[in-house]
Image (cartoon, rainbow over all chains, first blue to last red):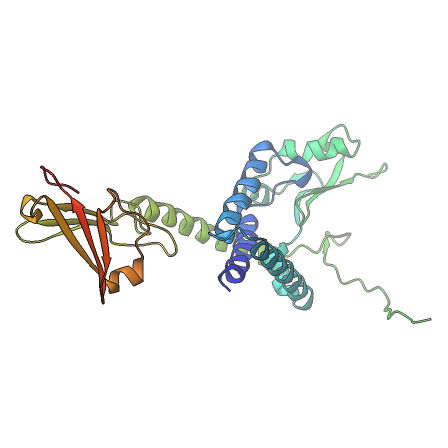
Length: 149
Length: 145
C-alpha cells in the first residue's frame, strides 16, 4: 500500500514541481534543464521504490502512475479550470512589433529564444514576426507578418 | 457501421487583437504567477528548515540526554525520519563498568518502535527477555561507547 501512495504522491509532486519550475521552450531544452528533469525524476524514483526493489513493487508503481496519469488527464478534460492549472495557458510574447515585457520576464524567456524559433521557421529577422506565442507545451509558435502588412 | 458523434465547429477560442485565436487567459496567469511566487518562498523555507535540521539530520535535530552522575550519555535525533535508519550513540562513564563489562538493557517499547539494526561495537552477548533485550559489551580498560 505504501508503494501505491508513494507513487501517487511522487507523480503529483513532480507535476507540481515541473509546472512551477517554469515553461521553457521545448525545442530549446538546454543541458541544464535536462539535468533538472533527470535529477528530479531519479530522486523521486528512489523514494518511490523505498527499500523494496522487487518486481511486483515495480509493476505496482508503474500501474499506479499510469492510473494517476489517466485520472489527471480525465479530470483535465472534464473540468477545463483544472486543465488550466495543470497545463497553463498560451501566452503572447510578441505582438505587432511589441514585446510583452512582463510575460517575457516572468516566464524567463529572452528575445533570442524567440529568434531561435523564428529561424527554425525560416525567418531572418525579428521584425518579420507578427506574433510569437508561448504554447502550453513550452514551444514558441511564430506567426509571420503577411507580405502586404 | 457505427457512427461517431459530431458537432459543428464554433469559434470558442479567445482572440488577440480580434484576429488570432490563442485562447490566452491572462487573468488566470496573473493568479498563477502569484501562486508560484508564494510557492518559491515556501520552497526556500523548506530548504532553510532542512539545513537547520527541522526535518532531522541537522543541528536542531541533535539532542543529548544524560544521567545526573554522567554514567550514561545518549546522543540521539530529536526528529526521526519515517522508514529511515538513524544513529543512537550511547557513551558510558567509568561507573557503568562492572568486572570489565557493560550490561545494557533495552526495553521492548524502544526495540519495537525503532528496531535495532546494527550495534557498533558488537555486543559479546545478547539475551532476549520478557520485555526487552539485555546486551553485554566487553570493556577491558577505558570507558567505552
